[in-house]
Image 1 (cartoon, helix red, strand yellow):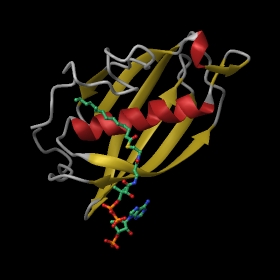
Image 2: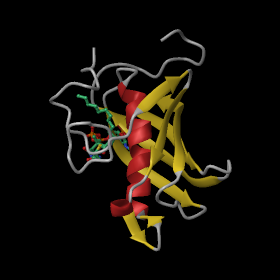
Image 3: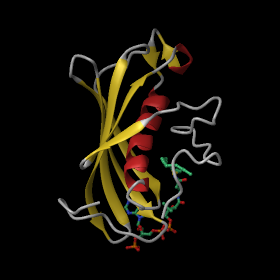
Amino acid sequence: MTKPLKDETNICFGCSPNNPIGLKMEFEDDGDVCRAYYTARPEHMGWNDVVHGGLVATMLDEAMGRWLWVRNLITMTAEMTIRYSKPVPVGVRLTVESSGVSQKGKLIEMTARIILPDGSLAARARAKFLKVGPGNLPEKGDAE
Ligand SMILES: CCCCCCCCCCCCCC(=O)SCCNC(=O)CCNC(=O)[C@H](O)C(C)(C)COP(=O)(O)OP(=O)(O)OC[C@H]1O[C@@H](n2cnc3c(N)ncnc32)[C@H](O)[C@@H]1OP(=O)(O)O
């Protein structure tokens, strides 16, 4: 059993409500998809009202890590590739979504995306996570 996400010992930069400088992303689970609606703040900017690319990566990484965590898959990010298709603006409601792709042994492939309010794709990640604990990716359609 994983620790509850609201545990006061959780100081995750991406999702903890207890980390004063964290993003404080709040995710919901919708079937095979993990989703957050998130509005980046001015302090997340690189320049010109555009979210820093490293933080775009953090949001995507967090979404995938969270997807795995709630399925009791204890993993670490081993590799991530990001296609930055459009600038991600601060101050607008973003949709950040993740889903599982496949598992081969300890290696789990994941994908995540950031969608702008007009429905267009701003960034997409493909990543490999390495299991560092027990558990396997559920088959599609498995009850969770
Ligand atoms: C309390 C509440 C908390 C809430 C938090 C919830 C949300 C959390 C969200 C968090 C989100 C943020 C999350 C974060 O930020 S996680 C932090 C960022 N990531 C890291 O720090 C990871 C650092 N790296 C490592 O620790 C190790 O290298 C890992 C653990 C990844 C593997 O080290 P380990 O010693 O175990 O494995 P191994 O090296 O023997 O390799 C094992 C096998 O895997 C194969 N392999 C390895 N890499 C790759 C690759 N890239 N593509 C393809 N294959 C790869 C390798 O060839 C080998 O294959 P084989 O030879 O066996 O066939």
